Length: 137
Image (cartoon, rainbow, N blue to C red):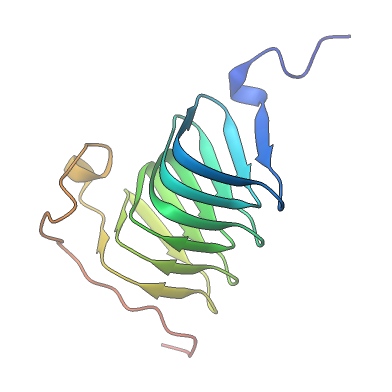
């Protein structure tokens, strides 16, 4: 029987709800944050901020899913998904962005493919501003 953790592409690291991390966090495997993180986060795979997760950091990953709270910019090479329990204060840079009804979002969204996967300055002009609301559109 093979070890399911042989490949970084199939591993998921979990930062539990009692964990507090401050600093620069990076890895090449999926990450689930249920605790608190402050600083910066750089991942080459999927990063999920779980319902109990609280992040005060700029996040860069291939795919970002938010169910908890994030204060900082989100930069995804592919997409960002804000679920109904998400609370995000910051800008989103990604090729695709989904905001589920009920999510709280304050910031700008940039879906210009030239900027999504690149390092851009935080004060770079945004091409599109979106306000998420809980009501029907």
